[in-house]
Length: 464
Image (cartoon, rainbow, N blue to C red):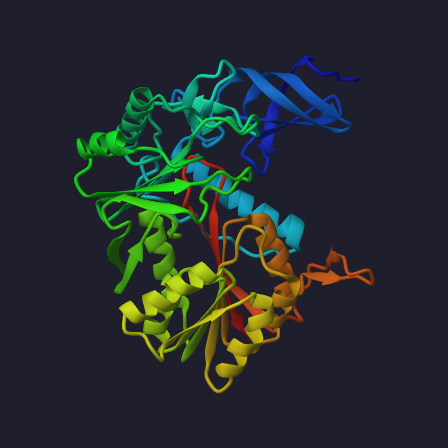
């Protein structure tokens, strides 16, 4: 059966793809069709066909799954953020557990039980941070919203259901400011316009609000407008005239307030600004950190990819001593400030540099102590020589935190021996972890990002 683009087909979704789309086999071709649930019969059109793999667009759900619900967001399917709102929450959790299990086995050769997903108390309205693009539509009108899937086209919105309820007030304020100021959204193709993004972080009921603009602009109207709805806030202006994708430049102006707020978590006092990294979900972040601290054993902890040092500080309190390794100088400086603020001199040691270059130093400094290594790398995962050094470190326990199941599968495969390098250095699946000095004791997904395809995973390994 020859299938061409725009053909209308029917089939039954058999499983989930990695992005939560339904997998439908039709005429010898495997289609990935978004917004379908396994078991549903779907009428769909072929969007692109490349050999035996193709992409489709659902036209009609002929036999809906009992797990299908009506998506409450009017932008669902248009905005690229949430792709799971058509599933009930229990089905979202099932999908994410299955995603972690299948990715680990298929990519990493790791066949180990995966725990039930740790759920979020608020499947909606959970985010403490907003980053809202401002741009122009095809008619040149200024728009505020989120990007469409795989696009830089902005879908205008008045609300976002995974953001906190204050998002509506922010959108209202920035819309009024645009109208009063006459400023235009930034056109990334023509490099024209002034306003690029509005970024907001809520910290303990206080708000850090940053307007990103291509040049210095008057924000007095915006400040007055925000004061009508937000009691305790600080307003910053970031001037970013670069043509890259970075949200912020290093050019800041504090327009009102002090530019940051102080808060406390798990006994650690910290100062949060517009560029401070904090997990966006307070509820699940607390559950994740609690589990890391529960698993952390020994007299010293080594925290790799430690960022601003929040977890390093917690580990210093738990274990007595903790070494944090972080490559970004600004984040390392924040960790130093955190150390001073919490009186952790001598207990919290921050090392600035690449993990692959500095891990040996941390291992040497803790050589006479029982140790735990905690790794929380970015989405790209760890360098292979870092994984190998962790594997060969001899520490009592290893705790991995990952926001990307694919790179977790690769790193965990190398760590356990389920993946091994061939004569050309390419990793191949072996599936035999018996020679590994470590055994996996638990794999636990955490639903840090409900309604989206993303999942955080914690893996604990114990030395045999």
